Image 1 (cartoon, helix red, strand yellow):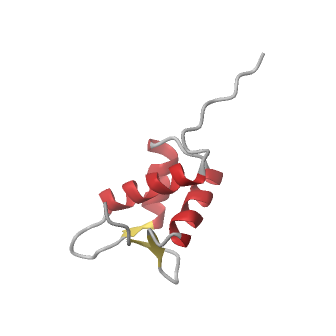
Image 2: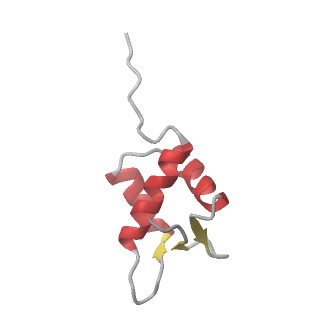
Length: 82
């Protein structure tokens, strides 16, 4: 019998909230942003999310205006308040 591994970020809103939390914790005050690669790595390797969950969470966070990703796709700005 195979058991499906529980994924805490299966729901896009949970993944989006985790991305906001991660991004907020990584933002340098002097520049006001963090980098997508750093947030992506922490989401995948520290928080245990999947690539699909990252994409869904990122898209939802941007659509809800919790995060903004610049035109180059390399910088994340947090727009949501606590």
